[in-house]
Image (tube, rainbow, N blue to C red; front, top):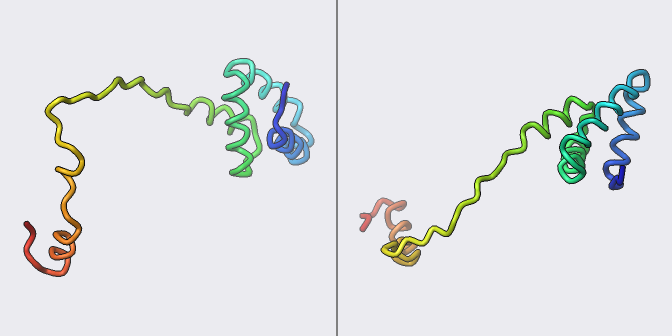
Length: 103
């Protein structure tokens, strides 16, 4: 298993904390790595390391929660306003906040 230093440290800490149970955790982690692939697995381990949580259950939950982002095409709207047409002058907001009229 090609591990990052963070991943290696996390697994070492897992084994220290769960001395009597780490074997089952390591086996389950291996299954998760095989199921999700190296990149997703290592990203989940790094997230768990940041949060300082140590269990295969956390990794399983993190991997299961990864959203799949839909591919969005070019939003080319020919009659759309430009950003400068939409943005109001800051002075208009200043005036409104101070109790003046909005335009």
